[in-house]
Length: 340
Image (tube, rainbow, N blue to C red; front, side, top):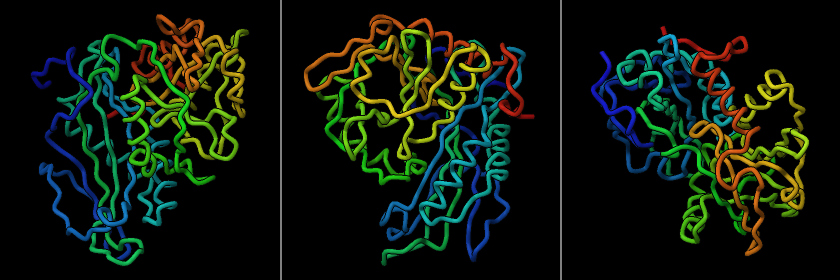
């Protein structure tokens, strides 16, 4: 039976659910994993996760579709990305097949917390891994936990996806070339100072340029950029240091195969931004957030179709992708994982 929650007024925050999933790594192997009810974790003060931040995480959602099924969206790609993060952080890989199994178990156990169709809410799923044994020398841990918890959440932006204002940041993203795939585990903490400073200055987000030349658009602290040209082409920046967003990858496919749009994944010079008709940020939390203004050290760049609401092309992309997620539009094979 569904929990008695005010689904339509949920915020984007933590609500404790009944079950979480944990698997332990010790003596060179992962155990079979299990569902547990205890939401607390007890670790040594010298645990590697505290001393050297050996940890990574993912984020995805479970939805109730129009026909009443509970589904997740492309969880295999989250599992694959977490495998890459683990390798880059010298952590043992938790196989993507087991990743999907763990997600399935924890969502099934917490099915009463999955918001109903039409509520605008979803069940947020947070898989994470950490080094747990005491480590004082600079080296990887030898014991780990892979865990998943869930929490019902409302829309990331209450009242709809209102256009946001971003600034061109003077801060670097602290991501060495070629390590974009571990951004979820590394750069969020590194970007907290920059985003806090942006908020204090009245901006919603930072636009990071490439660290080498500061001439090309990369991403924000928590989302990828997508742009629409005046002739209706979808353009997204290409760089080895950008997080490989599953939402962005899906939007590129939707644009080309569902909406018959031309798509380009290429380096985007910052000087080109003023020529785009629409701009947005894409990611798991909000799917697409329209960008209205970009502040370049006092010079305002206004995006024509994003000043008051989401532009028409981005709106069509948003409606199509969320339609696929919610079961209103047929999905490509393998995109929807049903929780049975």
